[in-house]
Length: 243
Picture: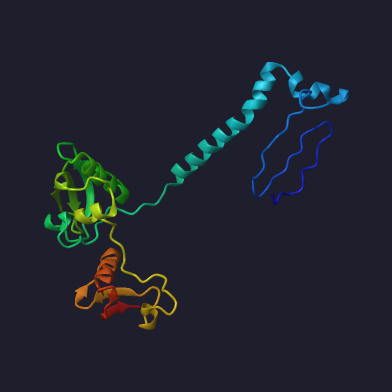
């Protein structure tokens, strides 16, 4: 679809080359005496008259080209790299394992391991979630090596072996207290004529306080918003923002 004009063929060239913007429709029908009448002048070009080696190359050309393209694309992705959030922790939920272990938010997880294993570097938040998931599924405690802004490190053990539910789900991660990486409590897109817009909030506002509670993380802000609903009705609160 949406293809350019075919390239002008050279003398003696029987192949027409076309580049299309949308690569749909890759069906190729072979010139074959078993499929229909073939003019005598073109019989030497028919698929069924080619030697076995040529037929094998013709049939394999498509799959091999797809394989080569996949290798090139994966190589390009690995060379460019994929950005992932660092394992910097948000403030844990009240009563969670992380809070009871002394985590306050802002710590970066440098390494992690299941109980009895050697510490392995943690390069992203997804890597940390995978270690926590393994610990929950295996019923094993998880050791975290944490670092704060001053560079000092300390080790913390999360007793995942005591989790009642072993299935990895949002409730399990809330019980652990590690749900999302630390993020700016910044207002995104607002619902037109919604309560936030009517109150004067704008996209890009940085939330500093909700009531008397300092806000340092986007996940913390979402939890405060959820907690402000009483009997199905949102309650009024005073927000301090920076713009």
